[in-house]
Length: 108
Image 1 (tube, one colour):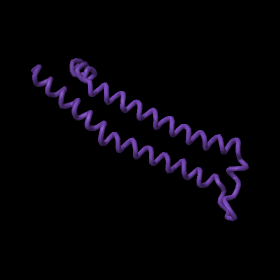
Image 2 (image 1 turned 30 degrees about the vertical axis):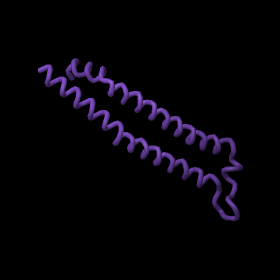
Image 3 (image 1 turned 45 degrees about the horizontal axis):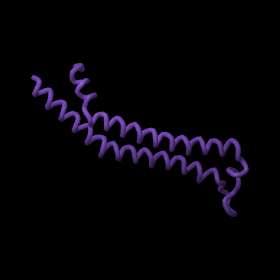
Image 4 (image 1 turned 120 degrees about the vertical axis):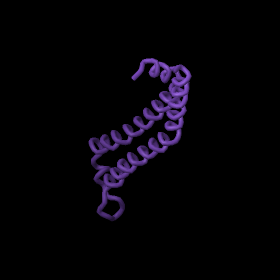
């Protein structure tokens, strides 16, 4: 890739905005997933009595719905990221590409 194009992209204010927004949102979702996943793991490791206790009079223990929640939570936060990426992040990316292509034509 031409170093001039790389420099123009990195100097673009929308690029800095994109990197900051994507990074902040990505780390927020990462921490949320780590809390849920490791919270589940800690419950399994250190509170076996609770995880193995039955819900009501049935045969299902608390571990099943909590484990299902972890799986569904993963799907939901993935969907949230994809939705934001397809709207806000793609708009910023398109604006950056258009501005850099415009400057490239002017420079040529």
